[in-house]
Image (tube, rainbow, N blue to C red):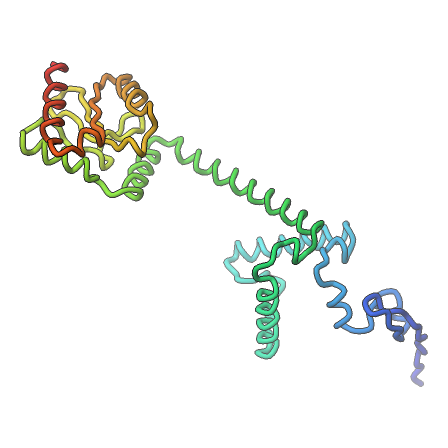
Length: 268
């Protein structure tokens, strides 16, 4: 003989629409909404803490985080818990349409307009903290790379080759001038030589510690010549500076040639 257990039916009020609905005794403590539509509307724009409470929300976040980390380590596109679950084409299209609708609704709006002032402030604070942590982590990684002299030199050369076309138009003028008048200077401004992690433009080829720096005053500070000259002098180098004032006049060749020849005479 089969004994059927009679289930008690209780009436409850939906938390979303306040509609009274019937629920069996098995779900009387769990069911709080009359339909999934009401549950989804109530849950929209709420945090885990608001839905589950602080303790349960923390555990849920930890589980999600661990699932994503594990998937990343395994090279998967989604968490391990979702593997093997295949959505129908209709479900995928519905999800895609919903996502596009959300994007269009949010387009051009601020966080305050989307989430409200209080929640927007929390989101911005969290994003700021995350960005700061990422910035500090990246900074530490770069510092670690730069502590290696060989890596530092390689990165400087790469950086120099990427940021500007070398030689510049001014440097090309001095290269041609040195070739025409057999001046003992070689162009090394493309990263061939580094002195205290600074790359001079020209170096003397007969063994003398002489340098020529060609620069545009617009791109450099007022104390550029003084600071750069002191830096190179610490390693025994004398430096001649040629700016755009020397290289732009019609008679720039005479001006620069005289300065270079005088520099060689004074340096012995």
